[in-house]
Each structure stands twice: as C-alpha cells, then as structure tokens.
Image 1 (tube, helix red, strand yellow):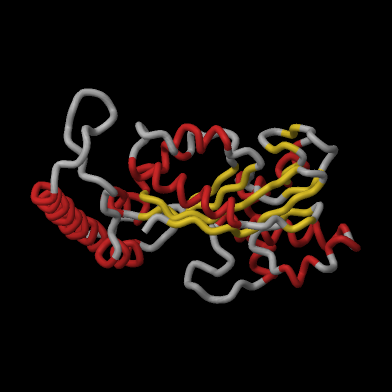
Image 2 (image 1 turned 90 degrees about the vertical axis):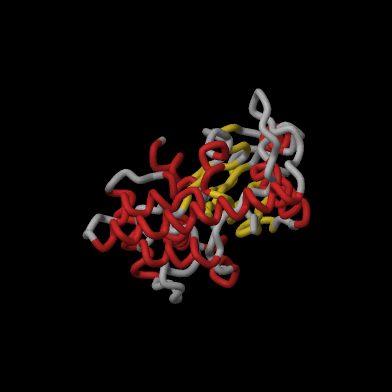
Length: 265
C-alpha cells in the first residue's frame, strides 16, 4: 500500500517546513527524485539484507495500481477490463516468483546483495524520507490526470497528510527526534547541535528505529552521523533545519537553513 505520514512539521515567521515518511513502488522513485525542491533519502537496497527483501517481495509485493491499455505515448488508454487485468496481475506475480528464485540462486553462489537485490526491484517498496517547504509544483504535476497512476496515488496521500497536519511553532526542525527532547533545545544551542546530528542518522536509515526494528542508541546514532559527515554523504543532513529571516531562500528551502547548508556555507 502506498503510504505517507508526517514525521515533523514546523512553522516560524509564517514559513512552514514538513518532513514525510513515504512508502512507494520503487519503480517510481526515479520520477520522484526529479523534484529538486525536495530533500530526500531512500532506504538503500544495497544495505538491506537480501533475505529481508525476499520476505517483503514474497509477502507484500508491489503490484501496479492500474493495468492500462497500451497505446502511443506515455499515458495508458483506460483499463484493460477485469478479466485481462486479472491475467496481467497473475503474469506479474509469476515474474515475481522467477525473480525470487534467481535472486536466491545468486545469493547461494555468494554474490553480494548489492547485485542480487537488483533482480527484486520491480516488486520492491521504497521507504523514503522527504523534507520541503514548497510542494505546489509537485502536486500540480503529479496529481494531473496524465501522470503515472502510482505517483498520482502517492501525491494524493502526501497532500492528504500535509493538509491534515498542524505544524508546531518552533525555530528548529528535527525529524525523528522525540518532542520531549525538544523542550531543552530552545534554551541550549549545543543540544540542537547534538540532536540534529542524531536526526541525520535516523534520516539516513529512513527510520527512528534501527534496521532490525530495535530501539535506537544515541551514541551509535551520533557515531553514524559523524561517519556520514566524514565520508561527505551529506543528503541526510538536509532534513534538519533552523528558521532564518522571513522569506529568505537558502538552497531549496524558503525561510529555513538546512544543517547541510550550515556545514557548507
């Protein structure tokens, strides 16, 4: 199921910044990544054990939203009808079964997951964290009738999540950080420095929890953040932000400066 939930929602001087966690078909991720007003990170299929991906693909495979009739151009000409659509779905799942078999074979041969996992990608979900201050262009393009049905469905749940959320008034935006911790942030800038590093680590793995679903460890999160910083893997540092002068654009954010912006400038 395509999903969107608000992870953090902040406002200051009438400028709003929102972070969402998304679940989308991996085959639309390249379309999503074209939107350069977004800062985003996706859980890497290189990092997730093949056995875990095999379980997901077996039990919860991505199935296209619509089985559209072929025609010239990028947009399908309506649905193929119930009977043919059922045959298409059965064929799709048969292809999934074959992909599982060959991925397992490669794994048994000792091939690293960064290659073995690729065979599963048409049937995989992508977990994505995205932060932005401006969403209008994305919704204009992706809610249009001629957009691919899967990204249209994603845009709809994203818009619903944002429209339903009430932003918290705060000059600091820290995804995946408990609100209880934030009570101290306004009084001590050094705590903000620490928490935004922890937030970056959690954005890198697109979860508050560890990959094994265990509770996070603050020291390990800090160690991961500094490791990412040292290696110049800086996209996870784009989701944390501090409010700036009203209306100012800094990189892709309006009214907010990301942690990455502070690092580089």
